[in-house]
Image (cartoon, rainbow, N blue to C red):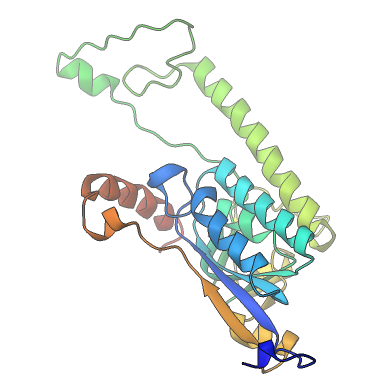
Length: 265
């Protein structure tokens, strides 16, 4: 009722957005620009919040989707002139850290894992197994590199070289994102872009995080004990809730588990 009364100051509010899961486009990932966009748009635009708090728990994934989410956060923050604070739970690694870097401050738990500023590609080779089983691979392309890194044929040195060149471009883009957002806080004498990860206080020591703290006490410290919280989180689709996408969800779960497993989670 108080908010409708003239000349009465409302209690400050903070919009809390949960960004959780592996980052992948379409239905393969629980976190991407498509799923995050409505949450972020409502968080920044509804009720004139004093701040937006991002609660992040992600092992990373798609560079493009990470970049899109990070760019959306910065655009909304600048349009609405609202500060953004990131709070890391278990992990904000690789693309998860890319998203966290869009915040003005990054807060971690003493056990949070952050970093992994690098690019990875992994697959399998099946050509020897196929040869033993007498299976013949038939591929027809227009363009000699159309079947680059085909797992069903022997690996070609030129394919690996081309992949590494692509990874180098993505790595440079990732490094530019981090240095543009946190450059003044990063040590000049340490390479933080090797794919290494840091935990809790060590992440603060190398400039990848700003402090140890959790969303409620930190926001109360900044905006007072009367601060109100509005939480925004993704909902599962109706099809997922009724088990009508079991096969696709199972594949996505396996891919996501492999990402979390890199950090012992």
